[in-house]
Amino acid sequence: MPCRRLVALPFLVTIALAPGPAHALTVGERGLFSVRGHLATGYPGLASLSVSLTAFRPVELEAGVEGSLGFAAQYVRAGPALPLLDTRDEVYRGFTLDLPVLVGYRHYWFTRGDVHAATANVAATGDYWFAHRFGLEAQLTLGLTVPFTDTFDAIGVVEPDVRLSVGLAF
Image (cartoon, rainbow, N blue to C red; front, side, top):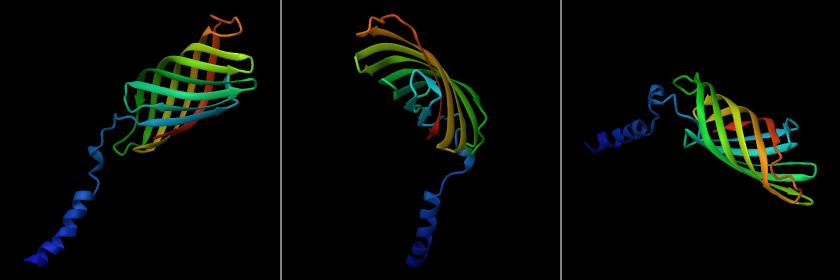
């Protein structure tokens, strides 16, 4: 009797630790976060790096840094991300398209002083998922930035915010 238990134990452990069937996955689930960057494909920043937290869908949180000649900036934004398309299969391979609408705060550092601004953006975010938690992402962002305090008398001047960024989604 003890020999049968000893033989059965590895078998039971293997069954307990084995992944479930692919159809048990929920296709509508989104990723947890993504990391994106751009270089010379945006305005006003020449380069940027951002992280989006997407684990709390339909709410998306984004934080990033950007810079160009003469300034650097950091920003945080939040808002709803509307799912437009999801072609993933049972093993999560496929394409998704979302429309995040985010508002937030941006802080610029210039050599002559700081600027604080409100920011609002809408983006088209496309992901191609190779696996459950790994995909390539491209995002086209269009938005506006409006300073509310600064040292340049530019309060209320609307500044466009446009970029095409690429990255990885997890």
